Image 1: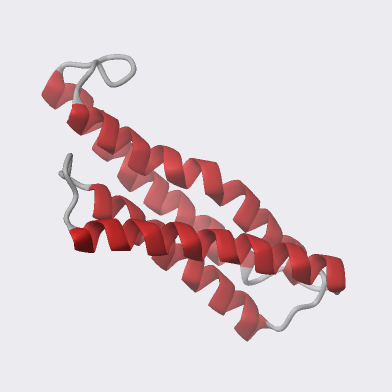
Image 2: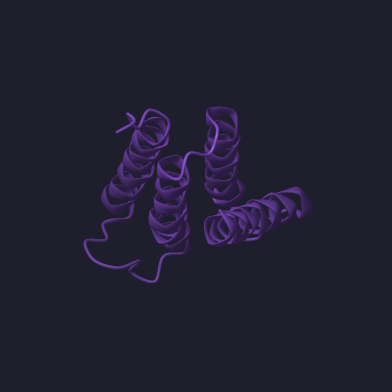
Length: 131
């Protein structure tokens, strides 16, 4: 049995990024005195979506990465897959930070990060079916 060495790196990086975004939500809760939900506050809604979006996509992408690694995909491809995922997931909340009315650049960042993540899911799923 081969040792799984690539996927744990991206699971750890995702967990660390998740902590950063969770702390950002918690700080917003203190700042806006909101204990549950977004309290109708747009800043809280933005903070929560930054975290929620990562939580929604990470399990599927990381599971695909693990399955690809178990199937024997070469490490450089796995690292490329994981790195693109991390870039997409870091860009997305930065494109949201502090913006109720996002700029064109922020809209582009959000769009590219979502498209990139969806393409990763498609590539991973097709690769698993074909491998």
